[in-house]
Length: 72
Image (tube, rainbow, N blue to C red):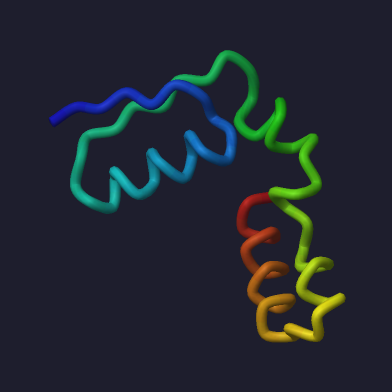
């Protein structure tokens, strides 16, 4: 099955990635550069674990930093 994902933001990339891992033939379409619009401007999506640091969740801080590094 072929699936088209419109938008290369955090949601589009995540969806395309998961669908590809599940064995689907995925095409991603983005008007601008990947992660260049709303996704990159939103500090809540790639916050680097600051929310978790406030709560003393050091394991989650480390995980968030690793994920952030992968996305950027």
